[in-house]
Length: 537
Ligand code: FAD
Ligand code: SIN
Image (cartoon, rainbow, N blue to C red; front, side, top):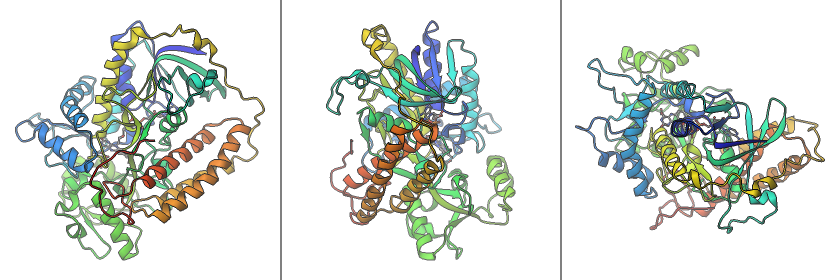
């Protein structure tokens, strides 16, 4: 058993921002960061376009960024939260610059600002087309300067510990559910260990892996959301899955799809169908720079009309020198598969990209469970509403990690790590479990869930499709629960279980929403209802 002061689950931008702040403020306390993979294997590392912020105060303003965010969110953003993130975000960007993150600059030393769909101004700071990699590098380097931060890699958090584990009945209605720590599968010794903590932050990222085609890496399996749901915490708006319009189409490639950043369209890239038509003008006056939900649906519709599996992103008319400077990673990737962007159009298709909903928090990152904060993609703070504005998520992650830290630091002295009840937390009980006879069953179920979600719960939904999805998920759930109670735990089995839970939550929320709004489009209810409502499970 390990006991710590601050336990941070996840080593992406949200987790590391919180960890750095806690370590600096409390040099005598330990901050423990746990991650199930390598420290930098996160959604954060793959962010391309950049981080949005009102940087050029002459042309841009907080009001404009707020308005763009609200328009994208389609009536469901929490306006207080939008104002907080936009206004406090600039300070957080300054902070990561102080920690060493480099953003591209113009010859005169000002930051180069990019533009993406839904933004009325150029306001996106970036590091070529590998912004996330640079930010993650800076954060991890800064982390290395603190002796009171420990990082446990390849440790898989299986479950949150609450009163439930020492025999109390915990339901959704329990007012004071409290988190005491976590059970962790240590992959070095394959043992399940207890880690207890005063303050716990979930920063477990997204869930793109529940779909067959996603821009997210393999770690993005929605573990945090699934754990909070099982612990009877509140989960919100899971139906709002953002599909990025332009993932590179590579037939036969499974797993993570390579992203072609929206910044390419910001610099002039044009979407064309197989007949070479620039089709976006038929769908929206903002054409290729309309918000993502509109562009992804337009592409989906063009693919269905023309019977193709992709459309094209045409960059052949763009200044190639600029292209290579701004997008060297994309240039090289295309070249490696025989696409010369100066001569050939890039085949692209939408892919699951971002989860707008998640663990419900208040404006301080507090979840409905005491001692448990959430920040970053796993959280639903109210910023994104029904659709996230491009490049707002890195910003949100930093703002809410900071706010969670502020809240935790004010309440830290009140915590009761000595509380006798902690002694009651039992060890993990693996009695009666045996090694799985066929690991392949887990892999097959994983493929099935991805297939179900892609076929029935994609960009365009119907009641019949949602019902079909639910029936199939239910069967997979039963089979997986039976494996879970009878076999020795593995990260693969735990991830499958979490992905099934997250898929269930997406379908459940989608079923409750009797309208089409933002990222959720159901042809049985094509209009928006008059009153915008959040769905909380
Ligand atoms: P992550 O960075 O995903 O980190 C999650 C961490 O949790 C990982 O360390 C993981 O190992 C750990 N973890 C998860 N489950 C467990 C478990 N059970 N046990 C232990 N550890 C666990 N946003 C923008 O604002 N601008 C962009 O330009 C942009 N581009 C993007 C491009 C791509 C290809 C992708 C995929 C996303 C992009 N996004 C962008 C979104 C943004 O990158 C993410 O939303 C953000 O980085 C999430 O950060 P996070 O800290 O919440 O989670
Ligand atoms: C992109 O670079 O297109 C992704 C930006 C984002 O997801 O915010």
